[in-house]
Image (cartoon, rainbow, N blue to C red; front, side, top):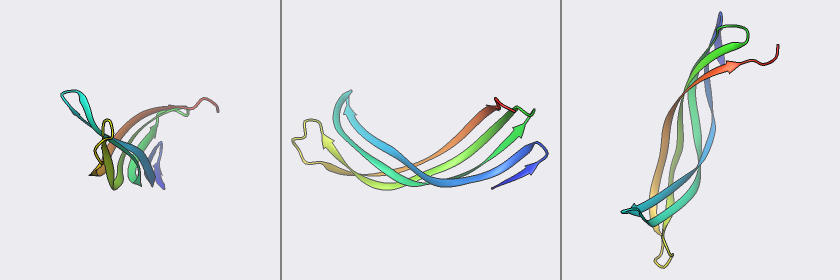
Length: 105
């Protein structure tokens, strides 16, 4: 979805997001607990692209990514003691700048 005005394009984006969320607990540099989960969620944002020539354009994009809340089981190094559950809430905001070069006509 986008709105073009002369050589500029304002657009919105959205979709599915996923990522590996790793948690590591260290005390004075010594590993103590660790856990890992693949979390899924959503992303939404908007951007602005402007064409300076027929071959060169620049863009700026903002996106919010929400991978939701998951409970990871943090395991002690050595695995002797049972795992400790830890709620992980993964959200992030990104800002991207780019320059595009069209290689063919």
